[in-house]
Image 1 (cartoon, rainbow, N blue to C red):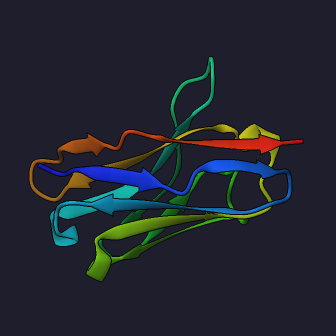
Image 2 (tube, rainbow, N blue to C red; image 1 turned 90 degrees about the vertical axis):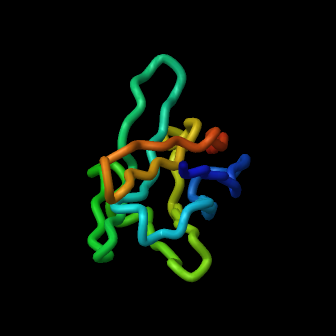
Length: 117
């Protein structure tokens, strides 16, 4: 079982920055890929960025160059640094982890990010 707790969302003006954190209850070596998804009102949930055990990162085209994902295995935490935020980044951001064995997927409760114009 993996529990994920997100933090760091909030309200920011366009052009500003936020950093999201996701603390995993399981030791990270049990987690293969961990990342962030987002869902805006009326839209499907979409991948924002993820990082695998080897440190390889993957970004959505819409955030590449503005967002940076990183993981701290010692703290069992993954971060999403979001810079140059735009109103279209407004969404609920969810942390997602996929385990090494069995490929089970777990979700956090979500954190709201609102970017005002």
